[in-house]
Length: 163
Figure (cartoon, rainbow, N blue to C red):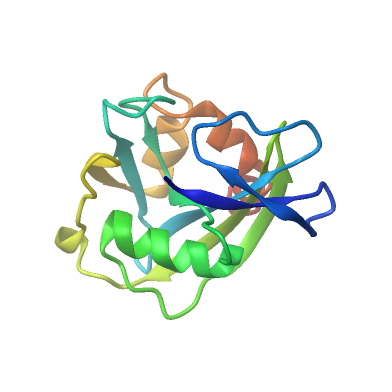
């Protein structure tokens, strides 16, 4: 059983826990960190979600990411999720967005890396494949039905800055 801290809309702790898979009560939120990986050569890393995922199975996303567990802050979650889902050890991440949905507060980060592109590791139950795309290929790909459109919406301001 995975436990999450519950947060209020303003981002303060609500002094209770949430259980992964259970309905999040109205007015409470959990934290999710998402990390966009951009290689120093300008290419973007896209991860394909496992086919067993309940949400968006098989779709690609330009992000590693996941929920913060009890006691974990968004930045620490981002570092952990990036390592777990890609094998990339990031010395530093830059926050590029914060947005909300009905029950989630999303923190988006950018990881600039010079990792070996063939060294990406996949996390069983989370990811099944990956792609490195040039900026032009990336902008074309995110418009396709193979891409998780809700993520594109969350990173829209960032996309506007790099077009």
